[in-house]
Length: 247
Image (cartoon, rainbow, N blue to C red; front, side):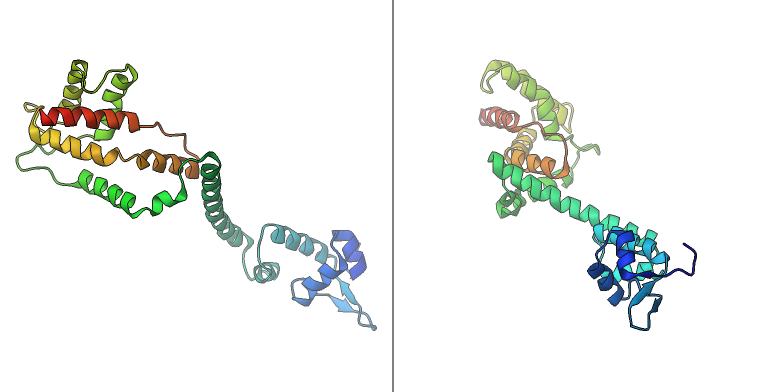
């Protein structure tokens, strides 16, 4: 049709697939204003109202509010800016939905519960681990920091656990010695009593059974691969170190 043609609200409804009631609703709110009225007061719309209503319907389906839609329709806001802001908001909603899915999955499988992160004792333990990891070195120690003890235990003790070596057996001695040597600040003193106490303190704190649950929950929330359970390795390490520290 040429630019002089005006549509009745009924014809506009047929062309857009919207109901007359919906178009009247948008019109009353100034989103799609009529171009003219008949002597009887009936609304008449310009052809560009078809495209504008299509935009309005799309933006509504994307969850935008009527005020934002009106400002976009009247070019008071750039559609690109609105889209960028909406994308950020959707990222937040996706994060919330992931958390809800993780909670529901955990409840369905009787796995870790959301109360874990609210447990003050567990949170205090996590803070202690972080503080210990960031603590300064003892006087006279080399400047290099100790490696991640939990990671070292996973790599060195894990094979011993898999092979069924008991922590109180003679076969466990070289495993503990290798772990101590890797963590020693003083290479010539891998059996230093202070080192054994430090290792035992760190591993006792890390061996909280809620640790595995916590990382499993994080993996569910963030769509990470399922983490390896380290409880058997940490329990073995703690038992072996306690026996040798008491000897």
